[in-house]
Image 1 (cartoon, rainbow, N blue to C red):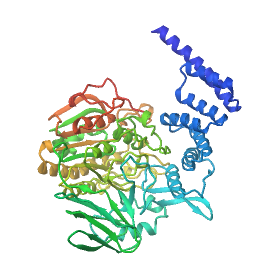
Image 2 (cartoon, rainbow, N blue to C red; image 1 turned 135 degrees about the horizontal axis):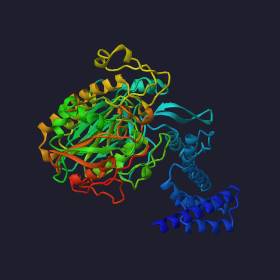
Image 3 (spheres, rainbow, N blue to C red; image 1 turned 90 degrees about the horizontal axis):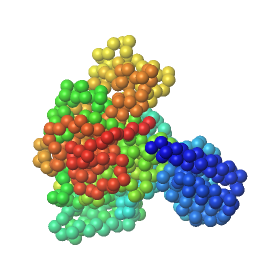
Image 4 (spheres, rainbow, N blue to C red; image 1 turned 180 degrees about the horizontal axis):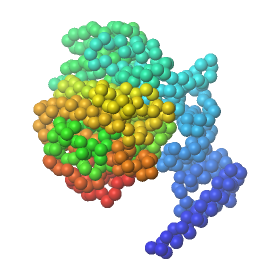
Length: 623
């Protein structure tokens, strides 16, 4: 072993010397034949493949081979999409090839991460609107979709930026083949169709919508916008339910549905989806040239190859080491439901906060492979990395999220869903549970894959005057009521404060009451072999650690990454508390095994032994 280590470090030192030499040559623009010889030696010495591709791309650019530089640059980007040298190479190479759109995105990555000066954009390009939409996303922090802090637009012939909402429009995101782009409307379950659209449209450029009114809810659906009549083919003996919305221009838009037997006149509201059941083929049309929006048809019918319901419930920040001693007392309904399934007692998250951890859940890959670890990261997840929702969509499920946040959405984490009901911050279990029940009842004739994200137990950042639950405030000692807001503190750094601990216990009961009602509804409605319900968290919280080392938050300590996971339903053993190590990356392969979609062999996720796989030796968490 010692000989092997000696060889490793000798090779490592040689590769480093070659790296430093190549870097120096590149800085002097000395990309000549000696440079390429050194690069060959660097590869031979086992140098970093991404660095080697960066050097190769620089050499090719110096030789005038922009197309070759793109091949090397894109190969490096696939492994390190957050890398300034890669961005600079691709920006230059794309520009030389006339690929203005791709070049603008790379320049936007640089500008956002490093706060550089404005970058070149061809405002006369045929794809100007698309370029502006994509660089707006690349310049933004990625928790707020569909709101955007740096919307790029043309003002007096130059590019300018300002707060906005993507509203009544498609999002400039790369979608899998066969998946239309998401169109952004407003969520109206019952009520007056135009009300929320009027408010959002009027104040769309006011930042208070994000900073102060965090309850505004948007309805994102895969859809096409058109002014031409749309023919919907419904095979004989089948039915579909079709979401249709007004294009956002008229408060009451005249609309018609023509079938072989009759014409059905009606109206649409701006940006709010109505649902129409079609038992026969039909033509949809709007008067004049007013646009309307047609969402993904929801096919009626169950298949024995699928479950009637697969439900994922993300309880954001549910810290299992803190909750475990309180579970049966404070969450009796949830505890009772999952006592008839599997509860994982040693479950850990790949990261300590949502932005980095959610992609691991949705892909089975940790941040090393998603490269999503910082809210300034702007790249989209490559299409060959399949998400949970894409796999379930391809199995034939109608995929919808009755309650979701905008976190990591622009990166493609939720791109397989047909519908996302989305808001920025306060995702209350009471509302989410009711929406989920309504979704089940509305589309009970189809097989559903649903995602429900709640933030009730997630501690709020300390940066503004705080309002805690009335139950908490009425029972806490005055000395513990106020928190110091002089220094803004993110949730991962909140110390062990009595009022937060009390709020946590109260929130556990709120969640149990609301989600418990949903779980009881599922038990009453379905047989055990007709559903799979998973409840999990994306991370824990360091503030529950009563004795942090040195008094500082341990971001990869037992509490910060001590997460929750429990599952029940078809194919799941009953009455098991599993002591094996599990990771948030394991949720993906577990659902693959239970639902029947193919699981890649290169995942960081592992199928737990209790579900037919093998036990882990170790779980990894990074901060």
